[in-house]
Image (tube, rainbow, N blue to C red):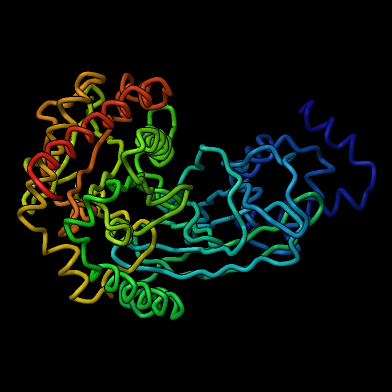
Length: 471
Protein backbone atom coordinates (compact mmCIF):
# COMPACT_ATOMS: atom_id res chain seq x y z
CA UNK A 1 0.00 0.00 0.00
CA UNK A 2 2.84 2.36 0.78
CA UNK A 3 4.21 1.84 -2.73
CA UNK A 4 0.77 2.58 -4.23
CA UNK A 5 0.46 5.84 -2.24
CA UNK A 6 3.84 6.94 -3.55
CA UNK A 7 2.75 6.27 -7.11
CA UNK A 8 -0.53 8.19 -6.77
CA UNK A 9 1.29 11.07 -5.09
CA UNK A 10 3.47 11.43 -8.18
CA UNK A 11 0.51 11.71 -10.55
CA UNK A 12 0.11 15.49 -10.45
CA UNK A 13 -2.15 15.88 -13.49
CA UNK A 14 -5.71 14.46 -13.28
CA UNK A 15 -5.68 13.81 -17.02
CA UNK A 16 -2.61 11.64 -16.64
CA UNK A 17 -4.42 9.55 -13.99
CA UNK A 18 -7.42 8.96 -16.23
CA UNK A 19 -5.24 8.23 -19.25
CA UNK A 20 -3.11 5.77 -17.34
CA UNK A 21 -6.18 3.98 -15.98
CA UNK A 22 -7.63 3.72 -19.47
CA UNK A 23 -4.40 2.32 -20.84
CA UNK A 24 -4.22 -0.28 -18.07
CA UNK A 25 -7.81 -1.27 -18.80
CA UNK A 26 -7.12 -1.84 -22.48
CA UNK A 27 -4.01 -3.86 -21.76
CA UNK A 28 -5.89 -5.97 -19.21
CA UNK A 29 -7.95 -7.33 -22.09
CA UNK A 30 -4.90 -8.62 -23.92
CA UNK A 31 -2.57 -9.94 -21.22
CA UNK A 32 -2.56 -11.03 -17.54
CA UNK A 33 -2.20 -8.09 -15.16
CA UNK A 34 0.26 -9.94 -12.95
CA UNK A 35 2.64 -10.55 -15.87
CA UNK A 36 2.22 -6.92 -16.92
CA UNK A 37 3.12 -5.65 -13.47
CA UNK A 38 6.16 -7.92 -13.29
CA UNK A 39 7.36 -6.63 -16.66
CA UNK A 40 6.95 -3.02 -15.58
CA UNK A 41 9.07 -3.69 -12.50
CA UNK A 42 11.66 -5.53 -14.62
CA UNK A 43 11.83 -2.55 -16.98
CA UNK A 44 12.52 -0.25 -14.01
CA UNK A 45 10.21 2.43 -15.45
CA UNK A 46 9.01 5.50 -13.60
CA UNK A 47 5.30 6.27 -13.76
CA UNK A 48 5.85 9.11 -16.23
CA UNK A 49 7.99 6.89 -18.44
CA UNK A 50 5.43 4.11 -18.18
CA UNK A 51 2.56 6.34 -19.25
CA UNK A 52 4.55 7.63 -22.21
CA UNK A 53 5.61 4.14 -23.23
CA UNK A 54 2.08 2.73 -22.99
CA UNK A 55 0.63 5.57 -25.00
CA UNK A 56 3.22 5.23 -27.73
CA UNK A 57 2.89 1.47 -28.12
CA UNK A 58 -0.89 1.47 -27.99
CA UNK A 59 -1.03 4.17 -30.62
CA UNK A 60 0.98 1.99 -33.00
CA UNK A 61 -0.21 -1.48 -32.03
CA UNK A 62 -3.05 -2.30 -29.64
CA UNK A 63 -1.56 -5.73 -29.03
CA UNK A 64 1.70 -4.05 -27.94
CA UNK A 65 5.01 -4.44 -29.72
CA UNK A 66 6.45 -6.81 -27.16
CA UNK A 67 8.39 -4.07 -25.37
CA UNK A 68 6.07 -4.32 -22.37
CA UNK A 69 4.89 -7.91 -22.27
CA UNK A 70 8.26 -9.45 -23.02
CA UNK A 71 11.54 -9.44 -21.16
CA UNK A 72 13.90 -6.51 -21.76
CA UNK A 73 15.82 -6.79 -25.04
CA UNK A 74 18.51 -9.44 -24.94
CA UNK A 75 21.32 -9.77 -27.44
CA UNK A 76 22.02 -6.05 -27.41
CA UNK A 77 25.33 -4.28 -27.00
CA UNK A 78 25.89 -0.81 -25.58
CA UNK A 79 24.30 1.67 -27.95
CA UNK A 80 27.18 4.13 -27.53
CA UNK A 81 29.11 2.68 -30.47
CA UNK A 82 28.49 5.21 -33.27
CA UNK A 83 27.09 4.14 -36.62
CA UNK A 84 28.03 5.86 -39.89
CA UNK A 85 25.45 8.42 -41.06
CA UNK A 86 22.58 6.88 -42.99
CA UNK A 87 23.22 3.39 -41.62
CA UNK A 88 21.25 1.12 -39.28
CA UNK A 89 22.20 -2.01 -37.33
CA UNK A 90 20.26 -4.68 -35.46
CA UNK A 91 20.89 -4.23 -31.73
CA UNK A 92 18.20 -6.41 -30.17
CA UNK A 93 16.08 -9.48 -30.89
CA UNK A 94 13.34 -10.88 -28.69
CA UNK A 95 10.26 -13.09 -28.79
CA UNK A 96 6.93 -12.85 -26.98
CA UNK A 97 4.35 -15.56 -26.43
CA UNK A 98 0.93 -13.95 -26.91
CA UNK A 99 -1.15 -17.12 -26.66
CA UNK A 100 -2.50 -17.74 -30.16
CA UNK A 101 0.41 -15.82 -31.69
CA UNK A 102 4.16 -15.57 -31.17
CA UNK A 103 5.70 -12.15 -31.65
CA UNK A 104 9.17 -11.49 -33.08
CA UNK A 105 10.67 -8.04 -32.49
CA UNK A 106 13.92 -6.84 -34.05
CA UNK A 107 15.28 -3.56 -32.71
CA UNK A 108 17.42 -1.31 -34.89
CA UNK A 109 19.70 1.60 -34.09
CA UNK A 110 20.90 4.24 -36.53
CA UNK A 111 19.41 6.92 -38.73
CA UNK A 112 18.77 5.11 -42.02
CA UNK A 113 15.69 6.57 -43.71
CA UNK A 114 14.17 3.14 -44.32
CA UNK A 115 14.88 -0.56 -43.89
CA UNK A 116 14.99 -2.86 -46.90
CA UNK A 117 13.95 -6.31 -45.75
CA UNK A 118 11.89 -9.30 -46.85
CA UNK A 119 10.18 -12.19 -45.09
CA UNK A 120 9.43 -15.67 -46.40
CA UNK A 121 8.92 -19.21 -45.10
CA UNK A 122 10.61 -22.51 -45.89
CA UNK A 123 9.55 -26.09 -45.22
CA UNK A 124 11.36 -29.28 -44.13
CA UNK A 125 11.94 -28.09 -41.44
CA UNK A 126 9.50 -25.23 -40.81
CA UNK A 127 11.33 -21.92 -40.89
CA UNK A 128 10.64 -18.20 -41.15
CA UNK A 129 13.44 -16.22 -42.83
CA UNK A 130 14.08 -12.47 -42.57
CA UNK A 131 16.66 -10.95 -44.91
CA UNK A 132 17.91 -7.39 -44.37
CA UNK A 133 19.94 -5.45 -46.92
CA UNK A 134 22.83 -3.40 -45.57
CA UNK A 135 21.78 -3.77 -41.91
CA UNK A 136 24.44 -5.73 -39.98
CA UNK A 137 24.08 -7.25 -36.53
CA UNK A 138 25.56 -5.56 -33.49
CA UNK A 139 24.60 -8.15 -30.91
CA UNK A 140 26.51 -9.83 -28.13
CA UNK A 141 26.78 -13.62 -27.92
CA UNK A 142 23.76 -13.98 -25.62
CA UNK A 143 20.50 -15.12 -27.16
CA UNK A 144 16.97 -14.31 -26.05
CA UNK A 145 14.83 -17.21 -24.96
CA UNK A 146 12.73 -18.77 -27.71
CA UNK A 147 9.03 -18.70 -26.93
CA UNK A 148 5.69 -19.88 -28.26
CA UNK A 149 5.97 -21.57 -31.64
CA UNK A 150 9.68 -20.71 -31.90
CA UNK A 151 12.01 -23.62 -31.16
CA UNK A 152 15.25 -21.78 -31.99
CA UNK A 153 16.85 -19.21 -34.26
CA UNK A 154 20.16 -18.02 -35.63
CA UNK A 155 21.42 -14.90 -37.35
CA UNK A 156 24.43 -13.67 -39.29
CA UNK A 157 25.77 -12.51 -42.63
CA UNK A 158 24.30 -14.49 -45.51
CA UNK A 159 25.80 -12.75 -48.53
CA UNK A 160 28.04 -9.74 -49.06
CA UNK A 161 25.38 -7.17 -48.15
CA UNK A 162 22.58 -9.44 -46.92
CA UNK A 163 22.07 -10.30 -43.26
CA UNK A 164 19.70 -13.10 -42.32
CA UNK A 165 17.67 -14.30 -39.36
CA UNK A 166 16.35 -17.88 -39.57
CA UNK A 167 13.58 -18.74 -37.09
CA UNK A 168 12.86 -22.43 -36.52
CA UNK A 169 9.25 -23.17 -35.61
CA UNK A 170 7.79 -26.26 -33.99
CA UNK A 171 4.82 -26.33 -36.37
CA UNK A 172 3.67 -24.69 -39.62
CA UNK A 173 3.04 -20.97 -39.13
CA UNK A 174 1.84 -18.02 -41.14
CA UNK A 175 3.13 -14.46 -40.88
CA UNK A 176 -0.12 -12.90 -39.69
CA UNK A 177 1.30 -9.39 -39.31
CA UNK A 178 4.49 -7.80 -40.60
CA UNK A 179 5.12 -4.12 -39.96
CA UNK A 180 7.73 -1.51 -39.01
CA UNK A 181 7.47 0.93 -36.12
CA UNK A 182 9.29 4.19 -36.76
CA UNK A 183 11.65 5.63 -34.10
CA UNK A 184 9.82 7.28 -31.24
CA UNK A 185 10.74 8.74 -27.84
CA UNK A 186 14.18 7.18 -27.56
CA UNK A 187 13.25 3.85 -29.12
CA UNK A 188 14.76 3.02 -32.48
CA UNK A 189 12.99 1.55 -35.46
CA UNK A 190 11.48 -1.89 -34.84
CA UNK A 191 10.53 -4.69 -37.23
CA UNK A 192 7.64 -6.73 -35.85
CA UNK A 193 6.30 -10.09 -37.04
CA UNK A 194 3.34 -11.95 -35.58
CA UNK A 195 3.44 -15.70 -36.23
CA UNK A 196 0.16 -17.60 -36.12
CA UNK A 197 -0.45 -21.34 -36.46
CA UNK A 198 -1.66 -22.76 -39.76
CA UNK A 199 -2.08 -26.18 -41.33
CA UNK A 200 0.65 -27.88 -43.34
CA UNK A 201 -1.26 -27.64 -46.64
CA UNK A 202 -1.69 -23.87 -46.33
CA UNK A 203 1.94 -23.51 -45.26
CA UNK A 204 3.11 -25.47 -48.30
CA UNK A 205 1.21 -23.17 -50.66
CA UNK A 206 3.11 -20.09 -49.52
CA UNK A 207 6.49 -21.58 -48.49
CA UNK A 208 9.54 -21.26 -50.67
CA UNK A 209 12.34 -18.87 -51.47
CA UNK A 210 11.41 -15.72 -53.44
CA UNK A 211 11.62 -15.90 -57.23
CA UNK A 212 14.79 -13.78 -57.23
CA UNK A 213 16.46 -16.30 -54.92
CA UNK A 214 15.48 -19.20 -57.17
CA UNK A 215 16.94 -17.40 -60.18
CA UNK A 216 20.16 -16.72 -58.26
CA UNK A 217 20.32 -20.37 -57.20
CA UNK A 218 19.98 -21.49 -60.82
CA UNK A 219 22.81 -19.16 -61.84
CA UNK A 220 24.95 -20.44 -58.96
CA UNK A 221 24.27 -24.01 -60.06
CA UNK A 222 25.53 -23.18 -63.54
CA UNK A 223 28.68 -21.67 -62.06
CA UNK A 224 29.27 -24.73 -59.89
CA UNK A 225 28.78 -26.95 -62.95
CA UNK A 226 31.46 -24.94 -64.75
CA UNK A 227 33.81 -25.18 -61.78
CA UNK A 228 33.20 -28.91 -61.43
CA UNK A 229 34.10 -29.35 -65.08
CA UNK A 230 37.48 -27.62 -64.69
CA UNK A 231 40.16 -30.21 -65.45
CA UNK A 232 42.92 -30.71 -62.96
CA UNK A 233 46.39 -29.57 -63.93
CA UNK A 234 48.61 -32.03 -65.83
CA UNK A 235 51.26 -33.76 -63.67
CA UNK A 236 54.15 -31.88 -65.29
CA UNK A 237 52.53 -28.52 -64.55
CA UNK A 238 51.96 -29.48 -60.92
CA UNK A 239 55.62 -30.21 -60.41
CA UNK A 240 56.49 -26.67 -61.44
CA UNK A 241 54.25 -24.88 -58.96
CA UNK A 242 53.70 -24.66 -55.26
CA UNK A 243 51.21 -27.08 -53.79
CA UNK A 244 47.74 -25.56 -53.37
CA UNK A 245 46.03 -26.04 -50.01
CA UNK A 246 42.46 -24.86 -49.43
CA UNK A 247 41.36 -24.47 -45.81
CA UNK A 248 37.65 -24.40 -45.07
CA UNK A 249 36.60 -22.83 -41.73
CA UNK A 250 33.25 -24.51 -41.10
CA UNK A 251 29.93 -22.73 -40.63
CA UNK A 252 29.86 -18.92 -40.57
CA UNK A 253 27.41 -16.07 -40.79
CA UNK A 254 23.85 -17.19 -40.15
CA UNK A 255 25.13 -20.69 -39.26
CA UNK A 256 27.06 -20.45 -35.95
CA UNK A 257 27.73 -24.18 -35.59
CA UNK A 258 28.16 -25.63 -32.12
CA UNK A 259 28.07 -23.45 -29.00
CA UNK A 260 30.58 -23.88 -26.19
CA UNK A 261 29.91 -24.06 -22.47
CA UNK A 262 30.95 -20.42 -22.16
CA UNK A 263 28.81 -19.34 -25.14
CA UNK A 264 31.63 -19.20 -27.70
CA UNK A 265 30.62 -20.10 -31.26
CA UNK A 266 32.26 -22.80 -33.36
CA UNK A 267 32.32 -20.52 -36.41
CA UNK A 268 34.67 -18.09 -34.61
CA UNK A 269 36.91 -20.81 -33.17
CA UNK A 270 37.52 -22.47 -36.53
CA UNK A 271 38.09 -19.22 -38.41
CA UNK A 272 40.81 -18.22 -35.94
CA UNK A 273 42.46 -21.63 -36.32
CA UNK A 274 42.23 -21.56 -40.12
CA UNK A 275 43.93 -18.17 -40.23
CA UNK A 276 46.76 -19.41 -38.00
CA UNK A 277 47.26 -22.53 -40.12
CA UNK A 278 47.27 -20.45 -43.32
CA UNK A 279 49.88 -18.11 -41.85
CA UNK A 280 52.19 -20.98 -40.96
CA UNK A 281 51.80 -22.72 -44.31
CA UNK A 282 52.49 -19.53 -46.26
CA UNK A 283 55.56 -18.86 -44.13
CA UNK A 284 57.18 -22.04 -45.44
CA UNK A 285 57.17 -20.71 -48.99
CA UNK A 286 56.10 -24.16 -50.22
CA UNK A 287 52.34 -23.63 -50.44
CA UNK A 288 49.73 -21.46 -52.05
CA UNK A 289 46.95 -21.22 -49.48
CA UNK A 290 43.31 -20.17 -49.86
CA UNK A 291 40.49 -19.96 -47.33
CA UNK A 292 36.90 -20.63 -48.35
CA UNK A 293 35.90 -17.73 -46.12
CA UNK A 294 38.02 -14.97 -44.62
CA UNK A 295 35.18 -13.37 -42.66
CA UNK A 296 32.01 -14.30 -40.78
CA UNK A 297 29.89 -15.17 -43.81
CA UNK A 298 27.64 -18.10 -44.73
CA UNK A 299 28.82 -20.33 -47.60
CA UNK A 300 26.78 -23.32 -48.82
CA UNK A 301 28.51 -26.68 -48.46
CA UNK A 302 28.74 -27.50 -52.14
CA UNK A 303 30.11 -24.04 -52.88
CA UNK A 304 32.97 -24.80 -50.49
CA UNK A 305 33.80 -27.85 -52.57
CA UNK A 306 33.54 -25.77 -55.74
CA UNK A 307 35.97 -23.19 -54.31
CA UNK A 308 38.56 -25.92 -53.73
CA UNK A 309 38.18 -27.25 -57.25
CA UNK A 310 38.22 -23.76 -58.74
CA UNK A 311 41.62 -23.21 -57.14
CA UNK A 312 42.74 -26.64 -58.45
CA UNK A 313 43.52 -27.63 -54.89
CA UNK A 314 45.97 -30.42 -54.12
CA UNK A 315 44.57 -30.76 -50.58
CA UNK A 316 41.39 -29.62 -48.83
CA UNK A 317 40.99 -29.29 -45.04
CA UNK A 318 37.60 -28.52 -43.52
CA UNK A 319 38.00 -27.31 -39.92
CA UNK A 320 35.30 -27.81 -37.29
CA UNK A 321 34.76 -28.17 -33.53
CA UNK A 322 32.37 -30.78 -32.20
CA UNK A 323 29.62 -30.84 -29.56
CA UNK A 324 28.06 -33.83 -27.85
CA UNK A 325 25.74 -34.59 -24.95
CA UNK A 326 28.54 -36.33 -23.05
CA UNK A 327 30.70 -33.60 -21.42
CA UNK A 328 33.52 -36.02 -20.58
CA UNK A 329 34.22 -36.82 -24.26
CA UNK A 330 37.14 -34.85 -25.68
CA UNK A 331 39.90 -34.89 -28.26
CA UNK A 332 40.75 -34.14 -31.88
CA UNK A 333 39.48 -36.40 -34.67
CA UNK A 334 39.87 -36.64 -38.45
CA UNK A 335 37.19 -37.77 -40.90
CA UNK A 336 37.55 -39.01 -44.45
CA UNK A 337 34.83 -39.88 -46.88
CA UNK A 338 32.77 -43.01 -46.61
CA UNK A 339 29.24 -43.53 -47.89
CA UNK A 340 28.67 -45.68 -44.81
CA UNK A 341 29.95 -44.04 -41.62
CA UNK A 342 32.43 -45.89 -39.43
CA UNK A 343 30.11 -45.73 -36.41
CA UNK A 344 26.81 -44.27 -35.24
CA UNK A 345 28.45 -41.14 -33.81
CA UNK A 346 30.19 -40.42 -37.13
CA UNK A 347 26.92 -40.90 -39.02
CA UNK A 348 25.06 -38.58 -36.66
CA UNK A 349 27.77 -35.94 -36.93
CA UNK A 350 27.70 -36.09 -40.75
CA UNK A 351 23.92 -35.63 -40.78
CA UNK A 352 24.22 -32.67 -38.44
CA UNK A 353 26.95 -30.95 -40.46
CA UNK A 354 25.25 -31.62 -43.78
CA UNK A 355 22.15 -29.82 -42.52
CA UNK A 356 24.10 -26.55 -42.42
CA UNK A 357 22.60 -25.52 -45.76
CA UNK A 358 19.13 -25.93 -44.29
CA UNK A 359 20.13 -23.70 -41.40
CA UNK A 360 21.08 -21.04 -43.91
CA UNK A 361 17.59 -21.17 -45.33
CA UNK A 362 18.62 -22.68 -48.67
CA UNK A 363 16.48 -24.98 -50.77
CA UNK A 364 18.82 -27.75 -51.89
CA UNK A 365 16.33 -29.50 -54.12
CA UNK A 366 17.01 -27.37 -57.20
CA UNK A 367 20.49 -28.61 -58.01
CA UNK A 368 20.88 -30.40 -61.30
CA UNK A 369 21.57 -34.14 -61.42
CA UNK A 370 24.93 -33.39 -63.02
CA UNK A 371 26.15 -31.30 -60.04
CA UNK A 372 24.79 -33.79 -57.56
CA UNK A 373 26.49 -36.59 -59.42
CA UNK A 374 29.86 -34.85 -59.70
CA UNK A 375 30.06 -33.45 -56.18
CA UNK A 376 28.41 -36.26 -54.24
CA UNK A 377 28.38 -39.60 -56.06
CA UNK A 378 31.70 -39.60 -57.94
CA UNK A 379 34.15 -39.85 -55.08
CA UNK A 380 37.07 -41.67 -56.68
CA UNK A 381 38.82 -44.54 -54.99
CA UNK A 382 42.30 -43.05 -55.49
CA UNK A 383 41.25 -39.72 -53.98
CA UNK A 384 39.81 -41.45 -50.92
CA UNK A 385 43.02 -43.41 -50.48
CA UNK A 386 45.12 -40.25 -50.54
CA UNK A 387 42.70 -38.60 -48.09
CA UNK A 388 43.08 -41.51 -45.68
CA UNK A 389 46.86 -41.33 -45.95
CA UNK A 390 46.85 -37.64 -45.06
CA UNK A 391 44.45 -38.30 -42.15
CA UNK A 392 46.95 -40.73 -40.67
CA UNK A 393 49.64 -38.04 -40.87
CA UNK A 394 47.38 -35.61 -39.01
CA UNK A 395 46.79 -38.20 -36.29
CA UNK A 396 50.53 -38.90 -35.94
CA UNK A 397 51.61 -35.26 -35.64
CA UNK A 398 48.63 -33.66 -33.90
CA UNK A 399 48.67 -36.44 -31.32
CA UNK A 400 51.98 -35.02 -30.10
CA UNK A 401 50.37 -31.66 -29.35
CA UNK A 402 46.82 -32.29 -28.16
CA UNK A 403 44.45 -34.90 -26.79
CA UNK A 404 42.96 -37.21 -29.42
CA UNK A 405 39.53 -38.81 -29.55
CA UNK A 406 39.50 -42.58 -29.17
CA UNK A 407 39.96 -44.04 -32.69
CA UNK A 408 40.75 -40.55 -34.03
CA UNK A 409 40.53 -41.48 -37.74
CA UNK A 410 36.89 -42.04 -38.67
CA UNK A 411 34.74 -42.18 -41.78
CA UNK A 412 31.51 -40.30 -42.61
CA UNK A 413 29.54 -38.96 -45.53
CA UNK A 414 30.30 -35.25 -45.19
CA UNK A 415 29.27 -33.22 -48.23
CA UNK A 416 32.49 -31.17 -48.11
CA UNK A 417 34.57 -34.33 -48.59
CA UNK A 418 32.92 -35.34 -51.86
CA UNK A 419 35.09 -33.65 -54.48
CA UNK A 420 36.07 -36.48 -56.84
CA UNK A 421 39.64 -35.35 -57.43
CA UNK A 422 40.78 -33.38 -54.35
CA UNK A 423 42.08 -35.33 -51.33
CA UNK A 424 39.97 -33.99 -48.47
CA UNK A 425 39.65 -34.33 -44.71
CA UNK A 426 37.31 -32.86 -42.12
CA UNK A 427 39.01 -32.18 -38.80
CA UNK A 428 37.13 -31.80 -35.54
CA UNK A 429 39.57 -29.85 -33.35
CA UNK A 430 37.87 -30.91 -30.13
CA UNK A 431 34.60 -30.74 -28.22
CA UNK A 432 33.19 -27.38 -27.19
CA UNK A 433 31.04 -29.28 -24.70
CA UNK A 434 34.13 -30.44 -22.80
CA UNK A 435 35.66 -27.92 -20.38
CA UNK A 436 39.28 -28.90 -21.09
CA UNK A 437 38.84 -28.89 -24.87
CA UNK A 438 37.00 -25.57 -24.86
CA UNK A 439 39.79 -23.96 -22.83
CA UNK A 440 42.31 -25.15 -25.41
CA UNK A 441 40.22 -24.13 -28.41
CA UNK A 442 40.15 -20.49 -27.31
CA UNK A 443 43.89 -20.45 -26.54
CA UNK A 444 46.20 -18.72 -29.04
CA UNK A 445 49.15 -20.80 -27.80
CA UNK A 446 47.24 -24.04 -28.41
CA UNK A 447 46.26 -22.87 -31.92
CA UNK A 448 49.89 -22.12 -32.74
CA UNK A 449 51.14 -25.50 -31.57
CA UNK A 450 48.45 -27.61 -33.23
CA UNK A 451 48.60 -25.60 -36.48
CA UNK A 452 52.34 -26.31 -36.48
CA UNK A 453 51.65 -30.04 -36.21
CA UNK A 454 49.25 -29.77 -39.15
CA UNK A 455 51.97 -28.03 -41.16
CA UNK A 456 54.38 -30.88 -40.50
CA UNK A 457 51.69 -33.41 -41.45
CA UNK A 458 51.13 -31.57 -44.74
CA UNK A 459 54.89 -31.50 -45.38
CA UNK A 460 55.08 -35.27 -44.88
CA UNK A 461 52.04 -35.91 -47.06
CA UNK A 462 53.39 -34.01 -50.03
CA UNK A 463 56.92 -35.34 -49.41
CA UNK A 464 55.63 -38.89 -49.64
CA UNK A 465 53.63 -38.19 -52.78
CA UNK A 466 56.57 -36.45 -54.42
CA UNK A 467 58.74 -39.46 -53.70
CA UNK A 468 56.18 -41.66 -55.48
CA UNK A 469 56.24 -39.60 -58.65
CA UNK A 470 54.37 -36.69 -60.24
CA UNK A 471 51.29 -35.48 -58.35
